[in-house]
Length: 515
Image 1 (tube, rainbow, N blue to C red):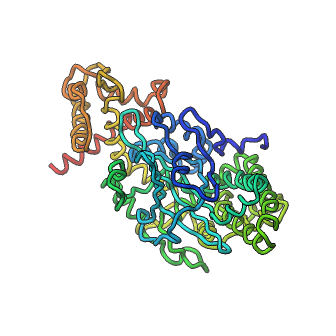
Image 2 (cartoon, rainbow, N blue to C red):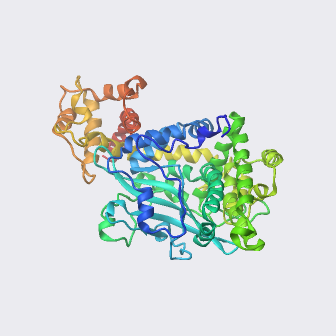
Image 3 (spheres, rainbow, N blue to C red):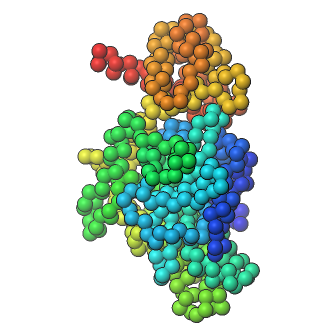
């Protein structure tokens, strides 16, 4: 591996204190049990620590995005994750296609589902938003895997990973070639896995993640674990804008693709983030082109007549992997013909060049369209705004829902704590009436949430003038020095708490207007 900073964006630290990631499982005939075993979440998993691992793996990405948007997008990712209780892991998984459905009807994300059943329902893995594509008679799919785990308070979370599903017939032919065939395949998968990570713009979705309703028609015992909730009312307007089809005529001479606004948003934001990374870290560009060259060389070695029987079949496999790589490569590179020309000049052979230029539907065409659309005139509701304004508006819409959810987290006793104490119980100082009123308003909102526990000390905190001043608590929460020793989850809960007084003032103002 090149000695440059490129790998910092690639989660090579796949064995962490919390989770030993599998990269792929590509035997030709893989039962559900094997998929479950490869992807199982350990019972003692710490969601909080795993969130820290993910933040460390993608820090450079969020730094670039933050510089573009003027927001701390890592904080937004954490706050969104806590509010939805969803943790998106950037490390992809490659699987053998054992799905019986040829093509899922696109009637909604929750209608395109496949389950890998487990003996213990807690280990069942769901693929969601399954999309299927054919290349030369060979199929690949893209989906998100959904698993469930609990945080240290006992609240349920979704854990999500991007998944690419590979054609089982192709993998069967490779398996017949024995150890040599398997070694050649793995030399293709290694750079492909990293290109998928660089090119998956779904990470933008994960930071301003769409709010999907609870899935329907699932087995009762499995559905009982589901923690998905419909989006809160504060997100109504933002959510409605994301679901609108793109207006016609956005790009002269191009037919507008039939995708929702959110897709164009994430494509443009991802490309601008990658562009800033390339500008700030030239080694990253060299690393991506090195990956493409390695992919090209490995694919040439894999597509051997001795493995696939004849030249036409070998070429079909080459076209298949080229199209699959191209599906992500176009998103791993910044917009701009000058940069594309720069990359093409250093990629040594035609196969990777074809992958780079693969702008055919369904994915590359959308990306090419996004490259031509003006990011300073982004269609948002009934107006046009700079694309990063969409991120800012999500952050603003999320403040109150995040406050409710994160106070729930704060007020809930920690697992295994016999005293049932929460963090607020141990604070003491004079509490003035505006602070008590703010906290009472927050507690009133919390009482309407299912499963909320309000320890007696918290109620006393809200109602007594002899306990900690809420305003002082907020100031201390905002002090970076007060965060040492806390996990990422704790930090972003406290960051949300730091903004509570301002948010509560807005709520109280609205109540006074209604009165």
